[in-house]
Amino acid sequence: MLEGGKIDSKQAVFLMVSMVLPTAVLFVGAVIANLAKQDGWISILLSILVSLLIAWLAVNLSLRFPDKTLFQFPEVILGRWPGKVVAFLYLWWFTHINYEILRQYGSLLVSVFMPETPIIVFELLLIAITAYAVRNGLEVFVRVNQIILPIILLSVFALAILSSPEMNLKKLLPVFIENGAVPIIKGAVMPATWMAEIVTMAVLIPHLNKSKEAYKIAASATLITGFTLLITFVGEVTIFSPEVTATWFFPGINATRAIHLANFLERMEAVIMVIWVAGALMKICVFYWVTVLGSAQLLELKDYKPLVLPFAVIFLALSIMAHDSIMDLLTYLGMFAPIYGLIVFQVGIPLLLLLVAVIRGQGVKQN
Image (cartoon, rainbow, N blue to C red; front, side, top):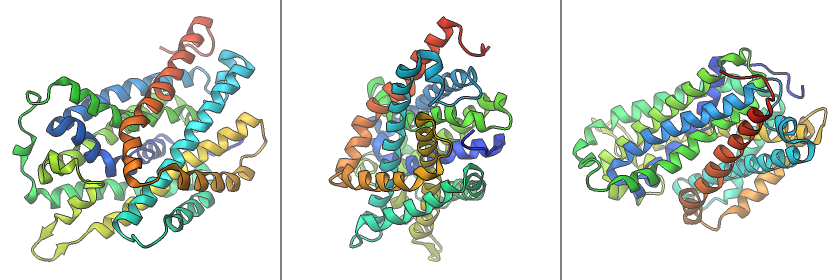
């Protein structure tokens, strides 16, 4: 095995939450409020249900081939060359996700904190740290994540509590009647796309100490992520109203600016930003590791570490070329990412692979 690291179920849950939460928390309010208005909390509940179904699909498929990853078992199901085509498509998708994450955080740091600093400075720093972590292996950055994720979750809940005096729950009314079902469904697509990145479990399962707990891990991570996004959205909308929230680039940052406690505790956005950037490092590590591991498996190499530096250059170059502006980035997230990611890579291909495996009787049968 190219990666000999093994992690337990708790570490896997933490890793899967960190894979989604850091960027989703930043954008969830603006994207959903723009589509579903005050009913966005219903959209998030719907997206949790969809993501749980996708998690079941990915885990069921992967457990049929417990010693193989998403880059390997397509060859068993479809044959050598069709399977390699599928593996290559996933390799591109994970590469795309990673350089988009890099660009999102680079854009955030430039837009909110240091507008005079070139974006490449922040991206180079992020990619250098994550490259070092990935080269040291799965177990290293998973253990770091065990420290960082609880701090991120605590910061989200603390932010909600501290900003509660500014909240007005009447801004969540009326429920459903004003907007109808269609905007709610549209609003559910983007958070479902974020949480459906749980298909990455199909790469992680061979590295679990107890692979039979994969269903529990995927469900737990999805519920934790969904519940946190729900709290974030409700907090932002009840502070600013859905109309105002939809106009912010980063409503979570503006929510921290609303905190004023006894003329003492205020202007906390810098502290929160440090915590979220630490979360971004973990998120990038996950997809960075998946990409280089998948590349080595696709090319049938004996070690993935020689690929770490070349992919750092690829991620950095593509992230710089990806978008002309932050508006272009938000347009991509709201309109194109769901169609591209959710339909093709998170539902379409896994469902096709599972159906073919079931029809052909391949792999270990799952109940």
